[in-house]
Every structure is written in structure tokens, then in C-alpha cells.
Length: 342
Image 1 (tube, rainbow, N blue to C red):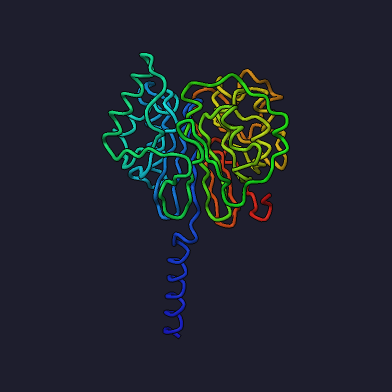
Image 2: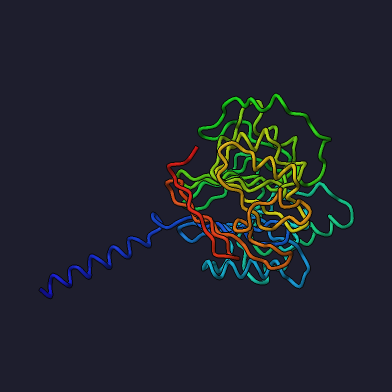
């Protein structure tokens, strides 16, 4: 009898160890509130980390503190790869403070800045000095960020775009017929590093602050990106990005809007995402003050109802394409089945 009980204990222990292996662990994605900028921490089942952008400088190191706190809760002691999508203050400003709190091994970006006035030049210089703490990697479209467990494919960088469709993509996009170009964007936004993240059957896209005309090149006349499970709204939900011809072609099941209380989340951009075919839910990091109730989602899908609380969201994805999104403020979470994939 004792031998039998011992065998059961051994089997249970083996099962417990098996349950903790990278093959069964989720991919965790943390959408950190940096008040209308971006800071997205991705932790792979193997424990590797990818941070996309670092929020703002100043505010007594507020954004770096928030990122470091989330990293600690996720068991992350260093950042394996920091991707800086472009050199605007709400994306790259927090880098010098962040490296005081978390070591960064690899700094990934699109190369030199195109904005050379005094303030943007100083911002870039501060980042360039900070990245000397690790290895610098300049990426171009088609490159990958070499992490275990997941495929992180660069689709835009430095103003250039992929020219060939990603796996399973390439279908003609009928929405292109309604395209009307905007004035050429010569800022850093149009040079954003955009990425498609794939984990088994799960896909998420993050295009930084890529703008209208560049987005067109990714999905017209053929959709080079395909469809996704999760769309992190481009440019925080502003009207010069996130046109129907790309958002509706991506057919996201869930959208995450990394807006601020008074930044992004504009009514037209919000409505485009809200009306996307197949969208199940839109989640917002902030209630958009100037948009009114008709252009904000219901309270349980909003992380911050005021301007400064700093609550974030967490997404945990499985290889079968299923995932769960959780709201840090109110504890509300919702599961999305892999079988519902477009």
C-alpha cells in the first residue's frame, strides 16, 4: 500500500513539473499605462522578455517605475530585447531612467532619427547614449527578433515595408478602393518599427505610430499581413492612423487601445475599430475624456477611469490561439476561445 501511495506521489510530482514546462506555459503580454505613450512587456513561456517602448521622460521616473514594477511581478530581472518603435518622447523618453532600474541586453530600433531640430535631436542623443549599455541592433522589414517560443517579425522600419506577404497572407483587399492618401508624413511616426507577433495559432500586431500612407502599403493592393487575434491600436487611436482599409482587413477579434485620458482615442479612430468585422471586444487603457460616452467602451473594459491611476492590462495567450485579457483595476477578465479564430 505504501509503495502504491509513493508511486502516486511520484506521478503527481512529474505531472506538476510537466505542467510548468515552457510547452504549456502561456505567452504573457502586459500593456503598461504610461499615460498615452506605449510600454508593452512581452514575456515568453521560456521567460525571455521583449519590451516595446518605454513611455515618457520626466514625471520623477513615473513610467520607468511602472515598467520595472510590472517586470518584477512577471519575474523579469532584465530585458532581453527593447524595441524602440520611433524617437518620440512618449515612446523613447523613458529609456535613460529605465536602464537605471532594469538591465537591457539588446536595443532594437530603425536607425538614425529623421527629426533634427533641437528638442528631438536631444531626445535621440539621450537614447543613443543609453543604448551603449547593451548591444545595438538596427532592423529592417523582414527581420526577426530572435526570441524562443515566438516569432516576432518586423513588417515596417525606417520608412520601408515588407514586400512579400507573411505566411497565410496576400489576399486582395477590396477596401483599398476607398483609399485617399493624406499629406506625406516626414516625421518619425512614418518610420515606426512595426511587428507581427506569432505564438502558435495566436497573432498580435503592433505598428507603433505608423501613419496612414505607410499602413496602405502593408495591405494594398494585397493584404501582406493577413488577419490577427489582437490589434494594438496604431498611434494610440488617432485619426492619421488606423484607417478602415487596414483595421478591417486585419479583422482582429480583440483590440487594445493604448490611449491616454486626453491623448488618442479620437471618435473617428475609435469608431473604425469598434466597427471592424468580427471584433468581439475593444479594451481601453483610459477613458477618453473628450470623446463622450458614445465613443468609450463600457467601464469594465477600461483600465483607468481617471487620468493618473496607472492601471494596466494583461493578456495571456495559449498556442491554440485562445487567450484571456484581464483588467488590473477591477479584476475583470474575459476568455477568448481559440476555436473562434477568424
